[in-house]
Image (cartoon, rainbow, N blue to C red; front, side, top):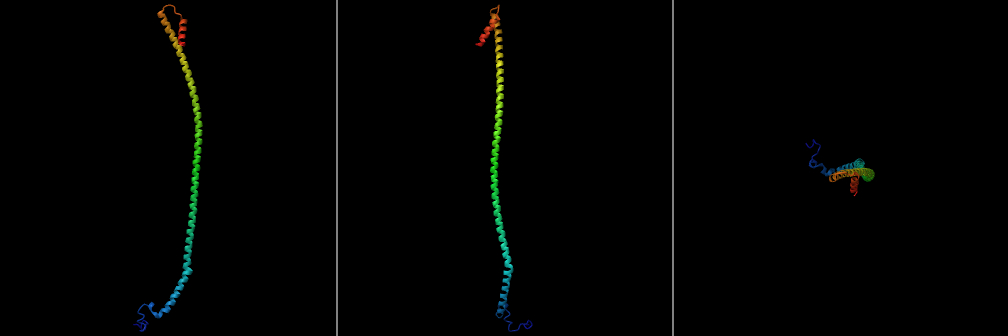
Amino acid sequence: MADALGVDGDHAGASAGMPQLDFSSFDNQIVWLLITLVVIYFVLSRVALPRIGSVLAERAGTITNDIAAAEDLKQQAIDAEAAYEKALVDARAEAGRIVGETKAAIQVDLDKAIAKADAEIAARAAEGEKAIAAIRDSAAESAATVAKDIAKDIVSAVAPGKIDAKSITAAVTAKMKG
């Protein structure tokens, strides 16, 4: 059966093991190993490694660009925050100014209203004082009239006879003046 496979009987025992360990074919195996390694080296150095290198360079460029863009965006955010803070301070100052102007305008209106109210109060007080003086004068006249009538009645009851109206009026008037 060994002849049918093309193997002669001398090498039947040596070929029974692994062919890589056959020392008679080491030279041939080493040559093919070197050729394979050189082909793999050229394929890797000419095709695969440049592609890998370009991908790594592209990734590094993308990362660098992304970092630069992030720094730019960070600076824009800082600038926007500063502008926002400045606008907020300006708005507060403007609001304070508007409040001050409004308070001043309201105070002017209030002063005018107070002056007008004071004038109205003074006018009404003067009218009230006039009315009180008129009432006082009217009451004094009424009291004088009542006093004259009572004095006349008393005098006529005490001294019946002739009653002098002028003397009673003069006496009542003198007593009322003080």
